[in-house]
Image 1 (cartoon, one colour):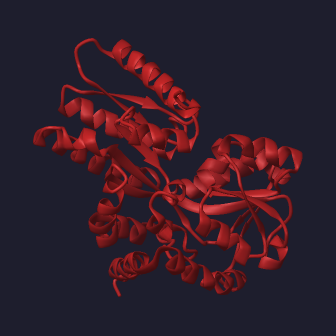
Image 2: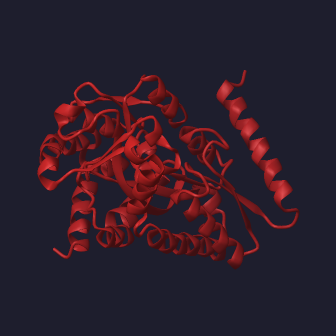
Length: 341
């Protein structure tokens, strides 16, 4: 007897096949799912990717925003099963498949300066030479990683030190290293599917969550979690992947079209993000007024968080062993190069 999950995947396969067939009777249609809305960062990237593919080949791209085909775990399974040709997903969700990808959740590892960050993602040996092999082992062709914006925490009460997070239930992705980070800051990390977060904040099941500010603004998360605190601890990273069997089966010409589209979309999205963090904060202020409190912690206020998080890097190495240490060492070299050190 087939499992429920097998039935679910079969049903999704049928649905996307019908949608693709309806989209075009002549051109081959490739399906691309991502974790955000069309107007969010991943959606903007996906639309540019689609534009480039369709301008430079006979193929079409059909986009599936968040919720269309399920949660993050669902679209990853569909990509691995070959139901989807492309998927955009944070390494936070792929940590169970690729433990080394959790390196992007080591607090205070990534720089806050936008130009330095972009240079790092564009030229990193760890990202461009080491991670592709790890993704390939999971049946995925890594096309591009890119940053989405500084991560901030939303809570019910102000946060100025780790003591202020004592026993506060913070929603996190199902990522072991992210769990360790919030434990180091005295919080109670609570993994929860994204679709349940707004309601859980509204009813008090959890008291906070973290995300880039554009996402906090676009999802109106500040309505039910009105204190926004920016610790400067991370920049949300995402990865665009193709099903590896699909990609390997393409002609060299089509493979180049796909890679060129991923590169062009990268250039587009990093330019789009200039000032987005500040613009999103301004929109929240304009919409919520005095009902929201926004705190950008000073260097002095961040120091206790930095000190408490030092153990998280050790946890990462313990979780991932020699391969994780190699990735971490290379990333630090790449970051020093980007910072001109």
